[in-house]
Amino acid sequence: MFEYLISSDTLKDWLEIYDLGSQDVTFIKELIKGAEEKKKSPQWLYEGRPKEKSFLYEIVANKRTGIDVDKWDYLARDNYHLGIQNNFDYQRILKYVRVCEVNNMKIICVRDKVVGNLYNMYNTRYNLHRTACQHKVANIIESMITEAMVLADPHILISGSGGEQYRMSTAIGDMEAYTKLTDSIFEQILNSSQTELEEARTILNNIINRNLYRCIGQTQAEQEKTIEQEEIAELKTKLVEAVLSEQVGVEVEAKDFIVNVISMNYGMQEKNPINNVRFYRKNNPDKAFKISREQVSQNLPERFSEQLIQVFCKKTGKKCVDAAEKCFAEWCKTKELPMPWDSDDTDSAAVSG
Image (cartoon, rainbow, N blue to C red; front, side, top):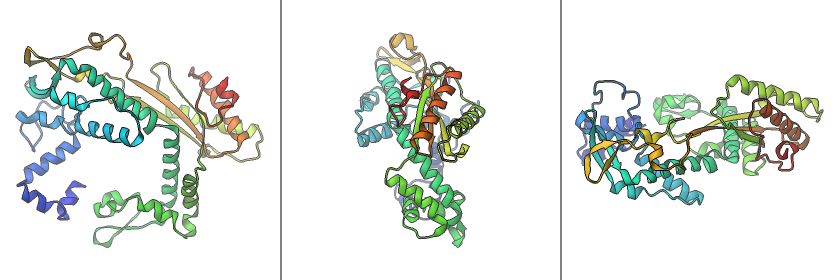
């Protein structure tokens, strides 16, 4: 996208005004892409800046610690617009950052006394994902929009470079076409009169009118546990069998159930990201060192990731939903998972039991 903006002259003049050349453009692209795929190499493979400026690659997308301005930006913005209290203070961290040399590499380090603020940052990220980004309603709507877009994909063409036509699913191969994939696509489907878009149009109208898929419930593993794709397929089969056995008067298939297995963590899967952070002391600002979780507080979490399992049903009839809830509760029991909760039917025996 950045290359397209330059080639289309949108940014070319501004680059010249600020005297930014080809090396600077390379540097910007490297900042966006990150360093994860290169950090294991013993050689310095970047072209935008020399090894002496390695710390610059930790500002925008910090693959080493996850402490970067991109994260600070969305934590402040998303919490503000969602009305969620943001207790993380990035300005305090900014006051106490400095560059130290570790293993012949210059990296960004922070003062030892702000370690608690960093744990607060990671916890704020986790809570944002838990309460908003991965909220059941947000995921239901995301699933419905995805389904509508897949249905509409063969019937919507987008003009790219040279007048070539692309579908939504192939537009990423042409940046001129890709830039046209905005919210207007939603409106285009919603306001269309094409019979080919009727099914997709119905789904989007249901979203607007809050006729959403039903939440059967959600659960999470008490221990570190991974739910495999085979187990998801097994659950869908059991849900279909359970609903059909109740003779609820509705035909259901495996595709009528959506099972989301969501990994929520502090940004580095099951690892504690603080283990990758280097700190310095006031009386020795040039020497970097680690701080263990036990040195900070005994009240900090021992685990830094968990799986959340959400089950949704496209059929909204009460008998169908009740049968699915009972089935999901039984499946959780056999998998030694906590009883499901937070279904749309709070009076369900599957939940209260």
